[in-house]
Image 1 (tube, rainbow, N blue to C red):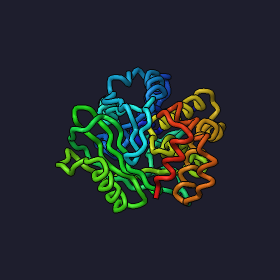
Image 2: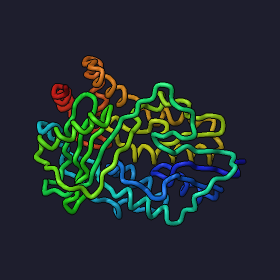
Image 3: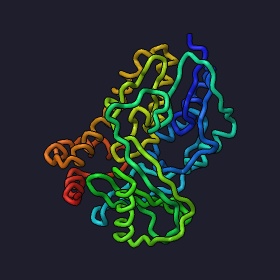
Image 4: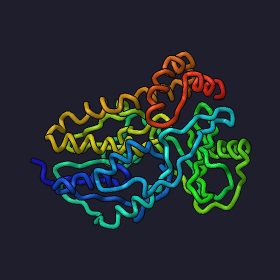
Length: 319
């Protein structure tokens, strides 16, 4: 019988798992090197899935929703109807969860690595894929859609946060390339350079779980972005919550030996999406085209309304 559980990382996955464990009577502690939550990326989330998961720890996601954009606009050429993506105040949600936390470390039977791209406890991934991001929060008078400028190796975005506040940023192989993408975005959509409320750099892991092994190492279990639970479009909030729930279910049923298998089964769709992303980046057009029907099926349910024709048109735009 498990007596003590140490969680490292108090982001979306770590705090969610901690609350699941505590409310079910487990002796769990959590630790984070940060003094407060940051605002790097992570404003978008798949609404229905996240709402149901957060409900299980007594949180109403609606209290944190900032906006629900009507369209996702890509390269100012393709307009896709938004179905499930909302922008939420992740920082506020985490700040409220942190109020009742006492960060500490103990000698434990089980260790959970929920440290995101840092993967601070699990062994490093031999061929990791970390993308650099740069982002700012600015004020603009622009219709509340999501504006994207995309190329094969990355994309820039402008997400509405409500009240004329916008999250503007980009992710690519290097920070320099991310800067270039942001400038392209500004020129394309007329999003002027203005004084920002804040700005920061970050990183995101873009590998599927099957390429993030070991997922389990001795008594250490990876959860969330640490083991590749990030969609091909870069949304890791809802997948990280679901991954934490999978770990909790395995622990409760005394089936931790099945955890890696459960992760790979649950996130088969991330494997498909990341395979598509790799094909696009490597300019393997036939492979990318072959995967399009699967991508449409996956994302039409969890994010935006799209068609095979839409994705083929997007591929034609990428350079």
